[in-house]
Structures are given as C-alpha cells and as structure tokens.
Image 1 (cartoon, rainbow, N blue to C red):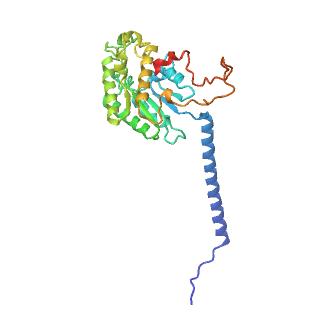
Image 2: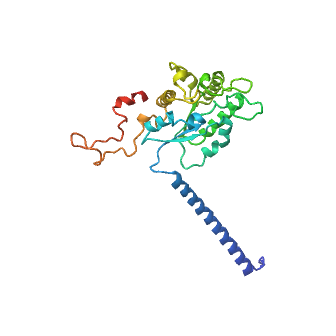
Image 3: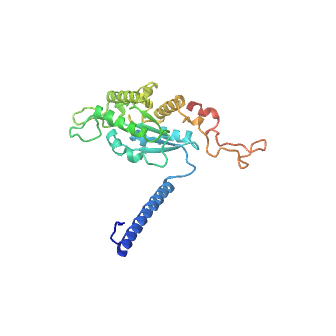
Length: 303
C-alpha cells in the first residue's frame, strides 16, 4: 500500500508563519483597544451624565441667535433637568451648506442619537441671486431637494429621533438695513419668504415630517412688523414667544412615545430628599419640578 508523500516543512517556514500570525494578532489588539480608548475619550469629552434626551436646534442665524431674547433660551429654561438643548446654529448658511455637513453634525454612528431635531433653513436661500452666482441664494428646486435629503438623513439616525421643520418666517422689509443691490432691487422680500415657506411645508407634508408655518403664525400677531423683529429679519422676544408656542403645540399634539412635551417629561433626580428645603410645617419640600418664576401661573402661557 502506497502513501502519498509530502515534502517536509522546514522549521524556518514554521517560524515565519508564527511570526506573521503573532504580528497580525498584535495589530488586531492595537486597533481594537485604540478604538475603544478613542470612543471612551469622546464619551468623556462630550458626555455629562446622567444622559438626558437631547434636543438639537439646527439652522442658520435664526437658530444661532436664538439665545438672545430668544426661543432657544426659553426652551432651555422649560426643559431644565429634563432635556439638553444643543445649539447647532450657523449664521449666514443656506440649505446647500447644511447638506454638506449634516452627516458630521449628526453622525449615524454616534453612541447617543438626539430625541428631537428642530431644523430651520430657507431665509438665506430665498435672497435675491447675485449676478456672479456667489452668495447665499439657492434656487427653489435645489432648496427643496436639499431639505428632502436633510430630512432623510435625520430620519435614518434612530427610531427615537423626531424631527420638526420650521418654515421661513416673514420679514419686515422696511426695517432691514441695506436691503438692496446696486440697481436698487430688494435683496430680501416677504414674498420670496412666502414662496420658500410654502415649499418647505409642502415637502414636509409629502414626507410626513412635522412642520411649523412660521410665515403665517407670526403674521397673526397684531402689529407683527413692529414687535416681532430686532432688525427686520431676526426675531425679538415677542417673535420668539410665537416660535416657542408653536413648537410646544406640535409636541403636545404629537402622538410620540415617549412624549417630548416639557410638562410630561420626567425630572432628573426628582425624588424626595431629607436635604430639600424645609417648609412652614417643618417638613422637607421637593422643589425639583416647581416652576420659576413663581407663582406657577406665570408658566401657563407655555402649556
């Protein structure tokens, strides 16, 4: 009976295979632990526990400046100890620039995804085009597609991520400084704001995305031109109140589980404690969810 004969394997070959295997294993361990360390560093830099629901405000100057007598500051106040309001506002931006960075602002592989994203772009897109082709203007068809792609990206983040789009608000043309080109044509008009606002609202209806018609809501206010703006474009305290009320209305009426309305969200560390302030009866009083300023009736406008 004959057996197949094989060439003997040299010790040198076995040693080489062992060295290569060892090196591959070391590289694997290095990459694995480096990735874990990097993720841990990111978590330590960005994360402050306990982890709260995150509401991200993403938009142009209407968002960036929303802490100046603004709707962002009011949301932060209402959601204190309930959600973190994260500002991602970029003055002067249009939907084209927003689309270029949306996957960096909202990475799909983030360890925690936002519970709510409020998006506003369009006011700068609607500005009169510059002859050079430069500047903020974005043609209406491209604006619609940009906003569509932004909405698709946000929907893909997680099942828990909710989205609200704000349409373009009106403007007070007479209040805007230097609002004309060298030929005397207006750069921003309330009519162009209406056109871009309606386009945004129509897109949101098609995509089943919650949207707020700011162009109409602000103009329902008496003397809106005189009281709703700081400079004809950016919102005053009165204009911001309208934005907050419209956002809270959507959150209250939305059938989202869990609810994202400020009155229905749990308070962080809201349990009773012997270290609470002592009331007139000599017992500790839990003030974790007591509205400020007092009395409680002062908060009724935010129901």
